[in-house]
Length: 316
Image (cartoon, rainbow, N blue to C red; front, side):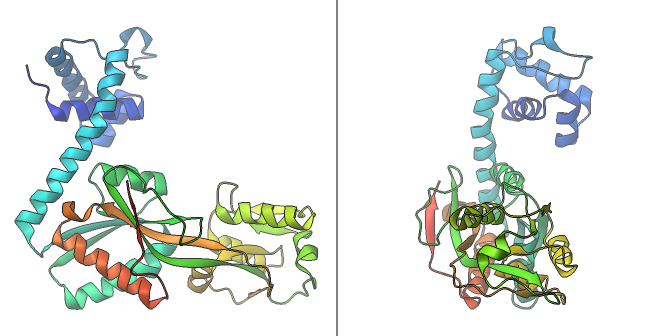
């Protein structure tokens, strides 16, 4: 009996979420519906896919070795179905259609919002859906065909080679975004960067590039920073700086979108580096005309900011 690819995707969801209930929520199905799909899949494959001896309280689900193997194969099925769906959109809609764009708040505000204004005038038949997502969520959604384009960031020089985020996806550079040191406007600041580094700071979590840059600057100058406030939102960081609770490091684009009356840039001759803002999506051949149009528009807007509209990056 042939394997139903959609049941493979149900197995994949159970593996990713760890339970039938969570998979049902993710797939907009009932728990009993998920269980029925899994039972039918076991019948189709003539394999035991769920380790029913390890179900805790009827909720947690572990897969057998066969189940894990098929769940991994389901990733390829998800990519293939997403590409087929995009191709169907391209053939059906022509230059019309919907583009689903994801990314983090700063990039969406800097590039997608201006693009939406442009589309409203130049391409009124093109519909855009905006989703604020994390980098990991965005890549999952891209691979599953739930997003068409993803705005992201890479903490390396704009000319550095890249291998792309995943097979079948292509990443293009939009622009380089330099880091700036920001201090309270109303308070006197040290004359040297080393003295400033030894004082209090407002910084992002350790996984972020600005936090790693602060650590590197402290190591380069042989100092330890003072007390650190850790925030995930740039508005909160700048508000704490304005209140005089420390200095911070933020990218140019963040500073321009969330200016604070109580902060100012701290001039330093040290090159702080920066990040590269990127747009990722399926290879050109698998994009709908609507997606290709919006992708070009994003790169044109980035070019107006001094970005590299001809900046090709590697394909995954």
